[in-house]
Amino acid sequence: MQIVLLLQGLPEGKVRKKITDSFKKSIQFYVVYIIMGFKGPGTAVAVLEIKNEDRQKIKNSIQIDSKNVTVTVLPANLNDIYMFGISDETRKMFESPESVNHFVQLAIKEMKEVETENFFNNQNRLQDVKYDVQRTIDRPEYQVYSFGSRDQGLGLKNSDCDIFIDTGDMYNGNKLQSKEEQEILIKKLFNILKEHPVTFDELIFIPNARVPIIRFKHETTGLRCDISCRNGISIENTFLIRKYLDMDWRVKWVIIAVKLWAKQNDLIGFNKFTSYALLWMTLYVLMQADIVIPVAHLQQLYKGPKKKVAGWECGFCQGKINDIPKSKNTDSPYKLFQNFFYFYGQPNRTSFKDAVLCPLIGGEIRKESFEKLSLPPAFRSYVEIMKTQNEEEKEYFKLDCVLCIQDPLELSHNLTKFVDGAIMKRFKLLCTFSADHLDANSGAGVQ
Image (cartoon, rainbow, N blue to C red; front, side):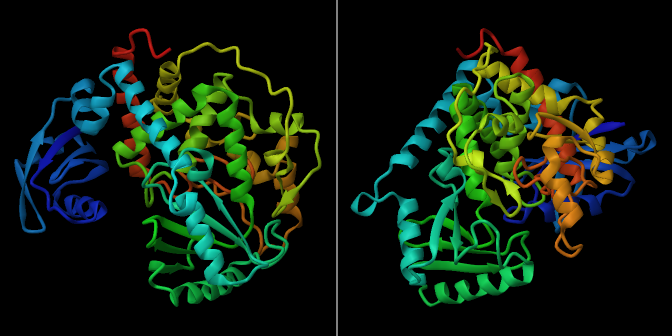
């Protein structure tokens, strides 16, 4: 049976995972799964799947880190669970289509300000970071690029900035691509930046990331930044995303609405979703509604010169593409926002376990097809790389995950491979709650 508990008086100032682990230890019976949703300081909602006979073992209070935590069993009605399960900010945003639009428009306004903001000598903050990195490294032959949400036009004032440094013939992935070579290169750059603490503060070398990075706070602008050096695939992806944002005005609206919702409900972070993954999950749903076309269709429309980055076809990302078809779907952005929750919140959906969602083709591919490399022509570059690369260089698409979303350019990359089972259960539950609530308050939708 499923039971929902309201926890009050939790220890404050601790990492949420530690609180969740402590709560699990305090329960004296078997739990099939647990989902924790934090609602504010000292308060959380726990959704548990337990045996029927263990219902009577639930106590009115428990001890967590020497603190007495009050436990209240909430009504099992879905709407009541919803009221406690999502954040107060989301409840406020979901009051009406107009309030959802209000939240989105505020974010759009902030994003425009981020794109156009002036800093020293009419340089925006992102350019100021790039200038300081280039000046500090003092190697004119090195190229400094930015990518990510700030370059996509989706950056908020507190968004991190992402930097790629091409140290020479690196952009296309022609050299120094191994993890060991990358660690050595990034370490050298780290040591250079470390000599300038007035500019680069809170400097951290992270060698164990999928791509080794340097993380720091840029003192002049206050921006938090990541530096990588592997190849330019992320820059190409940034250009590709801008193409999708330009296809239909509703695309940006829905992407922002999903991003706000995910941030409000603590779904973005370590072992959770990335903003980048949620963006492609949103675009995938919009492909189902024929708002935008799949990536492979864009590749077919592109008639310019080909370009490969790390073995992946990217020429179409920055190249001009004519005659991109306009959507005939007239749904409001509010309705399309609802569709995101309908799609990912379906309780009986089994394809998340058995298939890979592929924005490349706008459809699903069975996992066994990836295992056998029995894939459609659009996946030719993935098959070729898997068949020709040395075994130690191969990066197989990770299939043993609760959700598989394929990167549309770097086809061996599962964007959601680090999402754990509890977060996925909570994500689906929140999608169900959100779909029901938006449906109840849909009205005429946002025009």
